[in-house]
Length: 129
Image (tube, rainbow, N blue to C red; front, side):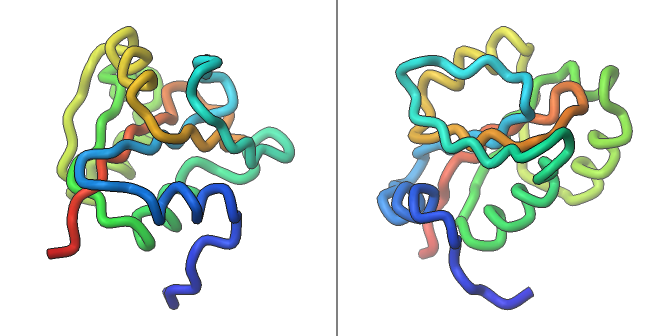
């Protein structure tokens, strides 16, 4: 994949401002989004864009040191969890309630059209040096 940058100017602007340990969330279309956290809504119809499409682009363009998932993904979305766990991502699992608390620390939530359960992740920024 060739690096072209992020075309969405709102997402690109937030990425440019990220510091070490800052967080961005990729969310399915059903995740409750706190009013106080900025959201870029990319959803156009159910399933589009998909969670994995957005995750692939962001992880290509963003230095990420940790991924946080709700532990419920293992039981309620095993197909997606199998795909994610096969990518050898440095990650941790938290309860869905704790995951929703993590949203309050995000610089941005990116809402996708994903319509499968628990297709959400917190990406914690790393450093390039």
